[in-house]
Every structure is written in C-alpha cells, then in structure tokens.
Image (cartoon, rainbow, N blue to C red; front, side, top):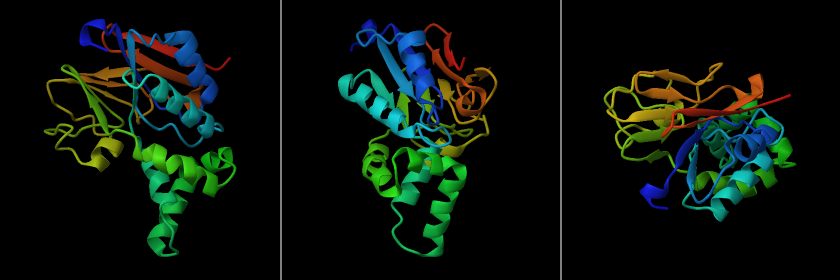
Length: 219
C-alpha cells in the first residue's frame, strides 16, 4: 500500500478478551477496507475478558490476510503472559511471574485456551511476533508511552509497555493505550485510546488522519 492510497490510519485501543466488541468495532463501526486503511492495534489483546483466544485468532487472521494493513503491537499484558509462559522452573522468580499474570487477568486467558499448555502453544509465538511500535512521518504508535526526552529507539521496552507519565515531548503525535479513560483523550501531542473495554463495555479506535473516533459498545 502506498502512502497516497492510505485513506485511514486507525489506532485501536486495549481489547482485553472482549471479542464481540472487537468484531463490532472492526466490521460494523470502522468497516475496515483493506485497500484503503491501515489498522494499528495497540496491544493488550489478552486477559480479563472471557474470549482472549478468539481475539488472538481474529487479529492473527487479519494480519495474515492483510499483512501490510494490519499492525499488531505488544502490550504489557502480553509481556506478563510471555514471562509466565516461558517460566519452567519452580524458583521464586518464576512463581512470582506466574502469580502476577494470574492476578492481572491471566486466569481468564488460560481458561479461554482450555489450559496453560494450550495457551502457551499459541501465545508464545504470537507474542514473539508482535512489534513494539509503529512509526510514520507524523505519528508514533506504542502501547503505553514514551518518557520525556526519549523516542522509540531510546526508550526501553519496559517504558514503551508500562509508562504512564504522559511526559512525551517529541515533535510527532504519540498514540497510546494502556491508561483507561472514559473517552479518548488528547494531551498536547499525546492521544490515549484505551476506554477500558472490559470494565466499561466500550472499545474505541481513532483515525489519526481525520481525527475521527470509532466505538463499539455493549447493548
């Protein structure tokens, strides 16, 4: 897809296993057009909601079918899951990694895959395939944030996945999720798209080229 043909560049906020909302958002609200649009998912596909497996299967199929138009970023919940799933020992660090994931919604993800082993078979390669950021001439998409004075190349992985400072001061517009708000919010040159889908029943997206909001909500 050439830059001239890109009609919409849409960031999609944290999904957290809310498959029905995701389906409504992409297919009914956004009405994704592969020949004209690029969707950038900001991570946190997993945990809390009941259908993490369906979410992972859906976004994976989208990327396979439209590799140039679908960008899948990594979120902190994918980071939690990967650390837990790759732990094989019984040492304290491994136990803590598994407990931390479990306490942050990992149980729902494990249940959706019908067990830890089956979850690992899909999630480890899926998470390994995710990108940390997506950057264009005018925009940077990351899951959580970029601290003051840094850019995608100089920020650490932990900062990109966990930062909540909203202190970014680069010249490009930064598009993030991670910190839930009741509505899409913009501070200076930072736009936050996480509207807490699992809690609020509202999953949000934002076309940065036209400053247009798309949402799916539970009935």
